[in-house]
Image (cartoon, rainbow, N blue to C red; front, side, top):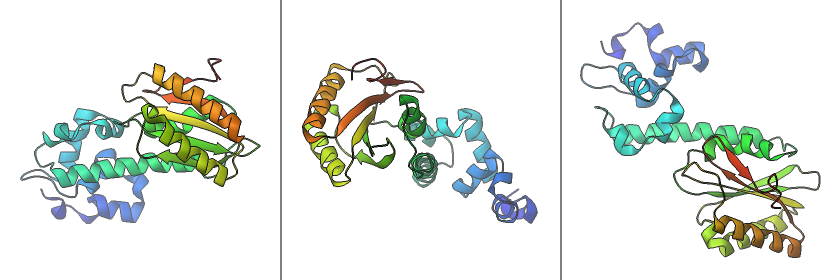
Length: 225
């Protein structure tokens, strides 16, 4: 039966608007994103099939586009809608963690804040947390292009913004898409350059954290800063 033929109180959209999004099951939420099903299959049924295969929204977000295309009725538009929605969720989590300018007391504070989004990224992304003299976050900078293998453009951009925001300290973070957070020789060389630049510009680098798959490496915790 097509969803439009269901009783109004059972349709996912109407149920959400009447009772709130928290009352919907995972398959109903995903069905709203998918919007339509396939011939002989409702959007909820399609959503159930996808969730039976991947189990979690995180796993769906990590899935390759080609893997999602294997599901009949899932084309480019639906994949884009799914990916965009999951990314909004990741960004919301990150924003909620930083909007109150929390005080950073340990590497774990950073990992818990940034790992939900950064652990699943397919490309290496570099961030810098700018802190005031009380170790409270002023801003989080994301360098859209470049890795530690292109250190000089990253350093120039980060320190320019750090000086503009009158930051006293910074903590640098990047991810390893492989899931292994152990630092490479390039990571170690970049960290040395970052420390030296910070000493000259009076913006001390407190840590460099590498995010893996639910694990992280802290240069500070390992006594390397």
